[in-house]
Length: 80
Image (cartoon, rainbow, N blue to C red; front, top):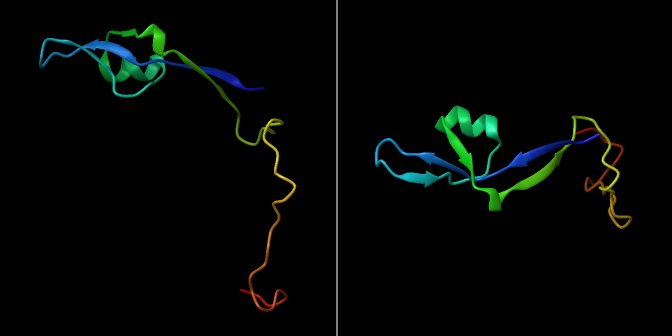
């Protein structure tokens, strides 16, 4: 089952300029806090993504029936 990952752009106080600034990319709260300290989410930028565990089958993603592997070697029985 997929875990939900909540991402925002974040507001933080820039010590160098003394201004309130927004992050350049969306990230989760733990990452934003680690990088910028005291942060506040920019609520309208909220995005929720499903994160699947390695090896977990994702039923929504299926191979198209017109895709198939093609061997381009002249002699398919020969080794590499």
